[in-house]
Amino acid sequence: MLTVNTKAYGKIDIDERQKIHFPFGIFGFEQFKDFVLLDAAQQPFYWLQSLDVKETAFVLINPLVFRKDYDLDVLAGDLEEIGLTGTEEDNILMFAIVTVPQNQQKMSANLQGPIIINRDNKQGRQSITLDLRWKTKHYIIEELSGSKDTAC
View (cartoon, rainbow, N blue to C red):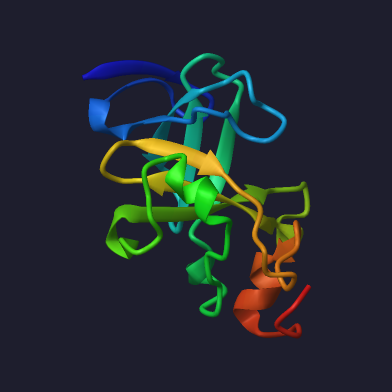
C-alpha cells in the first residue's frame, strides 16, 4: 500500500499498481513524473494525481465515452517510448484531460493531446494526435447530447 496526499480526497491509501510513471511528464508539467490513477467519485471520470505536489491533479475521461469515433492516431515513436507497439490494444489505457469551468455545462476534453498508459509497465505519455479532427476543446455534454456537429 502507498499513502498519497490527494487534491480530491485528502490522504488515502492506494494499491502500488495504481502508480504511473511519465518519463516526459505532462505538457506544461514536465517536472512531475510520478502519478497515481484514481477513480473519481463521479463516473466516468478519473483523477491523475501527482505524487510530488498534491495540488497537481488532472480530471480524465476515456474519449470513447462521448466520441465513439475517437481513434488513437499518434506517432509510433510516442507509443514505443512507453513500451508499446500500437498492436496490443488491450494493453493501452487512453484518456483525455478534462477542463471543468465554473459553468459545468461547458466542461471540455482535450482530444488533441491524449494521455496514453501502458497497463503492463505502468508508463504513461501525453502525445499529440495526428488526426486534425481532434481539438483541445470538445464540449462533453454537447457531444453526449448530440446537439452539435461531430467536430468542434
